[in-house]
Length: 297
Image 1: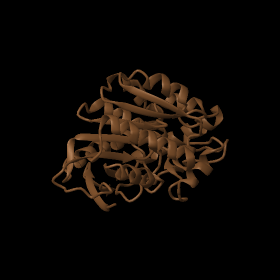
Image 2: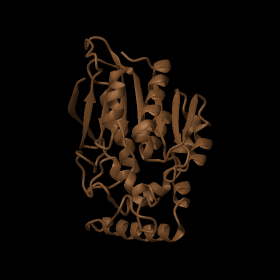
Image 3: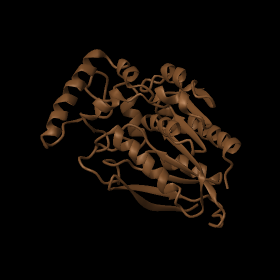
């Protein structure tokens, strides 16, 4: 299996990516489907996305796995800034780049996103009818619903920090950072009991586990689940039953509005689907779904 370090530009900033070629290394004159992949809230491609991409490549798919601007190996300052507008633009740039790759069929592009990136996959599927299919794993679908899953005192402390940081940003000052995941009761983006150990189990480092506080304002306003009626392409949605980060009840109600949605619920937590038996079940389901709708090379 071949994996190359590649890059593309989004908004004039370099986005770092891995390009996987199918395991059988087909003749580049024969076009294969490509899966564009990215992570969730504060996540980078090193946090288990390689495991998914390797399975897809083994099934005959090329994969373009990228880091958003401000995160991982991509450029962009300040670091760890989550901007929904910029991340959606990064997805658009990644899809456009994937369509130019040698040996890739530009009309068989699939988007795969997880958690906050799962919300972006829904957004892309609603925006780009040329896509061949979309897969959203434990997707973030509604900022308000996610905020209501956090206790009100913690939410209030995060909001105050976000507003202070927004003002600092407008004045060109250094950001205020909050933990991406922390223990319950801590002002952080994710405070469920499984959030911090789950994030660390994916390989996050201390520098990964922070976001600019102003990012919370974008998270709160984002509601990709409201666009699902516009998704005309085949859509597979993997929900986690006891999901404490992206409430699955709200997500299920919203994604079932997509005309061609296939929804499957796994009895595991938000972070468990990346590893072990849950990963094996989920990735096998993704490959089976793709085989029916976008057969690999």
